[in-house]
Image (cartoon, rainbow, N blue to C red; front, side, top):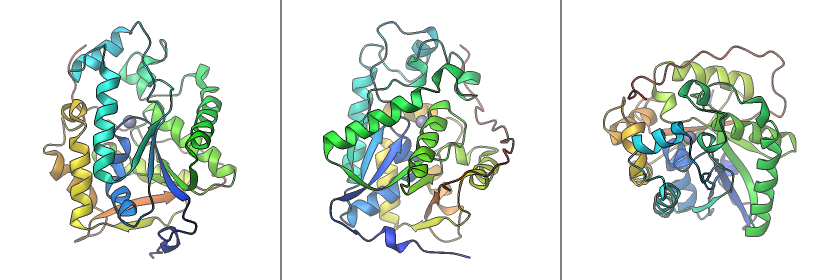
Length: 290
Ligand SMILES: [Zn+2]
């Protein structure tokens, strides 16, 4: 069965705008850039807010330095580079790029000092981070005069702690009565085990019928071009996926034959009582020694 959510495409009030929440610079372009481009084309003025887009600490951990090195980023201007990439990508998609001041997980003390920790459980000391995140978002939206029509957050495929935190923020917004969609985290959805995890997460957190957004070839080209703006990330993201444009096409073509689709899943206001064990996703297929 397929349901269309056309009501979301109409602009109920000119001042209401779709707000896409990204854990990191690049996640929205990677996962649902075609949808952003389509909404922009329809005059809905989408906003992309990067949640963990803040300053790194003055002294970096060995793990954070390794992450910079792996991407060819200089410790002193990594953030400036990433924000410039974000601006370029957002311009291509027709979105307004904004960010909150909270730092990326790799910069948050010694909570996440290995890939196992970064893609594991949220550190127990970080539960208050959700309050900080919500307050920072509310105050940014206020300051910028943005009234959200609805939000989009990551499903959390791949299990990165920052993706989990932004989905939790989405669930909180949903509990407050907001409409909150979740997008399929790319590249994780395309990696081995990704589709199973997507299914498990949708079963646990979402209404079962997705909003199928059918893209034109041009919308998909925009997503691909926007992704190419994140030059510092490309070699790492696509290390096991081959050509970026082909990988993005594979993701968009896998839902329905002959069409280019991005799916958004509506978060339920109440999460199912049972907590299924989420299948481990062996997405880290290859990485340099550190
Ligand atoms: Zn991310």
